[in-house]
Length: 194
Image 1: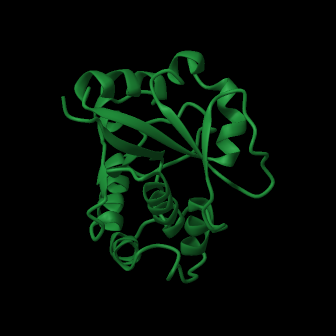
Image 2 (image 1 turned 90 degrees about the horizontal axis):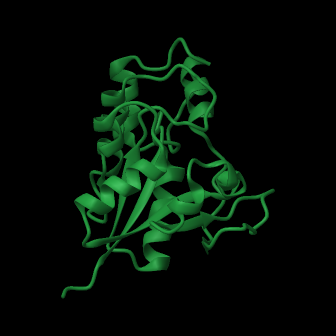
C-alpha cells in the first residue's frame, strides 16, 4: 500500500488572493514537508459577515494566475462546485470520500484558531483533518483542539485593504502577483468597493 499523500488546504474567499496567502502556503508546505498545497476558494463562508463579493469564477481565475508558477500549489474547487454555504466539515467528508489516498492539513491563521470552537461540527472535523495554525500577532498559540503551529513571516496585508487601495487608485504592486495586478486592472475590478 502506497503512503498517503500529505495535502495542505488553504481555504479563503481570495477576493483577491495576495502575496501573504502565497507566502503562508509556501512556508507551511516547506516546514511540514507536504506534497502539495491546494487553494480552496469558498462559495459562501459561514463565519464571515455578509459582504459583497465578486463572482466565484473571477476569484478562481485570480487564484489560478497567482499560483501558476509554483508546481507545489494547486486548486481545489469542490466548494464552488457544491454551491451553498461552505462548511469545512461537509467539504472534508466529501474530499475524504473522493481521495482516500490523501491526508489533509487545513491551514488557518491564528485569528481563526481562536474561532474554532464555533465551527460547524468541529469535534467531528478535527478527526478528519490536521489543523495547521499560522502564528499571528495578538493571538495566543493555544486551543482546546490539536493544532500544528507554523511560524511564517508576518505580512500585514488583507484582501480588504487591497480592494480599498484599488478603489482609491493606489498601487497594489508587491501586494499581489503581477498577473493578478494586471487582471484586476484589465477587468476593472474593485473600483466601486471600499
